[in-house]
Image (cartoon, rainbow, N blue to C red; front, top):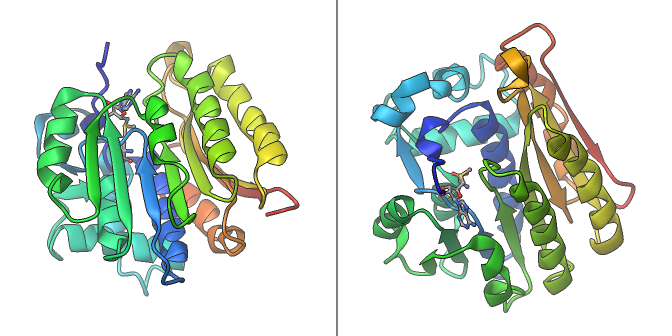
Length: 289
Ligand SMILES: C[S@@+](CC[C@H](N)C(=O)[O-])C[C@H]1O[C@@H](n2cnc3c(N)ncnc32)[C@H](O)[C@@H]1O
């Protein structure tokens, strides 16, 4: 049942978009001293070695972080948020060559402060084992072998009422589309002022095409500070309609500065990570955001 392994895709264009935005959201939370809680419903292994068999199979990172990593930030005029993300990845590699990429838990770990908490859920026993050995003993971190959808009630709202929920399912099963939507709804019911981020794939499936609209309608009804949607398209659909053309991140209750921060990022990533001439990126928001 649990066939998905994120190591095959680590560092690809979708990870770049997701992790650039995730890091910006956490930095925004760090602008106030009051502690926050980060909830990762689908945490993965935490970080990924690019030399391993899985990552080497399709070398997806080469058309993702690989295109940005060696660039001189100033000379290449990287948008500030992208430059900050590349710096995080560089720190994860001790400043050396690109050998590993941080997953979402490692990014949160890098940006957390003593007063902050990480609540990480992962259902695959092997991924969980790796994550638990990486962060399970760290102060402020809890790693659980559990269904992230079902776990929201145990961790929301955070005691400080400051926090971020990342909902990042594999979407290998079509049921993940409805579950991701319901998870955002549940998170906003329990924590209406919380920042909730959903990652979604751009694939040729009716469920995928409908999800952004459904997320918007729910966020309009529930989120106190509106929503933001950033979409990056880098590839054409493969033969018979298969393949990941791009991805989106949807954020309920985004910080008011996020739209401005991401405006130069999406066209930049579309240009730099393009796999065909029609690559494009945009960011849109609700009136309330
Ligand atoms: C896209 S990957 C996560 C990537 C990670 N969030 C990151 O950005 O580095 C999805 C993960 O969800 C796990 N998974 C699948 N169904 C799950 C569930 N119901 N609850 C928790 N984890 C699940 C998979 O084993 C996989 O490791």
